Image (cartoon, rainbow, N blue to C red; front, side, top):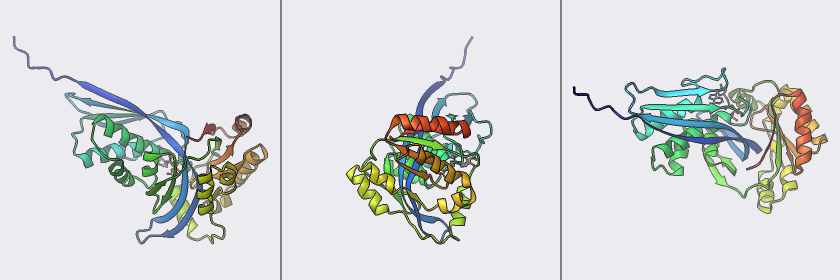
Amino acid sequence: MLFGKKQEITNTETTVYARAKINLTLDVTGKREDGYHTVKMVMQSVALHDEVRVVVTHGEKKPRGIVVRCNLPYLPVDERNLAYRAAELFYESTGILLETCEIHIEKRIPVAAGLAGGSADAAAVLRALASLHAAGLTDEELCAMGLKLGADVPFCLRGGTMLAEGIGEELSALPAMPHCWVVLCKPPFAVSTKEVYQAIDAVDIRQRPDTAGMLKALDKGDFAGVCRRLSNVMELVTAAKRRQIGEIKEFLAENGANGTLMSGSGPTVYGLFSDEGRAKTAAKMLGRRFADTFLTETV
Ligand code: ATP
C-alpha cells in the first residue's frame, strides 16, 4: 500500500519579557494637525514585566493563523489585543507566510495604568517574530512598524532610559538612570489615555517639567537631582479628578521615597527609593490598601 508523504510539523518558540515603563517627565508641547499631541518625556524601563511566549508552527493541515491566549480573562484576545495586531502587522509588512502563530501572554503589568503594558506586549511580539523568522529587520525598521501600533511601542522595543519627542517616536538614548527601587501603586480605577490627552487641551499648564535639568541630572548620575525634577503635566488632569493619586504620593514620600510621580496618563503612582528596605516596607503597607502594588527596580 502506498502512503502520501506526511508533512512534518515543526515548532519554534521564544519567550520575551515585555517590561513596563515609567515617566520621569512628561510634557505636552503641542498638537499636530492630525490631532496627535506632541510630547517631550523622559521614559525609564522597570523590571516588572509581562511574559510573552510566541510559538510558530509550520506544516499543520489546518493552519490556525494568529491565536492569542492570556491569563486575564477580561482582556480581548482578538484584533483588539495589541499583541494580536502586532503579529498581524508583522506578517503583512514582511510578506512572510503566516501559518500558526500562538501568543501566550502572562500579564503582570496592570492594565490601563499608564505603564504601557499593551505597547510592551506588542513590542515583545515584534521582537519575537523577527527573531523566530530570522527576518533580518533593523531596529529602525522594527520601530517604524511598532509606531503604526502605538506611540509608545518604539520605546518599548528599545527600553532603558530615553528622551522621547515628536508623538513619542523620536527617541534619544540617555545615560542609564542611577539604579533604584521603584514602588508602583495603581489605585483601583482605569484611565483612558485618549480622554486624558483630550482633557489636557483645556488646562492652563503653568508649571512644566524641567526636561533640560532632568537630562543634566541623568548625565551626572545625580539621583537626588532626578528625584527633584520628576514632573508630569498629566497629573493636572488625572490627579485633579481622583484624590487617591495625591494620597499615594504623600504616603510614599512620608515613607522614605526620594521622589514620587504619576506615570503617563495615570493612574499608577510610583515612588523611587535608594533604600531597598524602605521600599519593601512602603510596598507592603500600601499593598494592604491597594492590591495592585508592586516592588520593582530600574533596568
Ligand atoms: P499607555 O501608558 O501606553 O497609555 P496604558 O498602560 O495606560 O498604556 P494598557 O495597559 O496598554 O494602557 O491598556 C490600554 C487598553 O488597551 C486597555 O483598555 C486594554 O483593553 C487594551 N489592550 C489591548 N491589548 C492589550 C494588552 N496586550 N495588554 C493590556 N491592554 C491591552
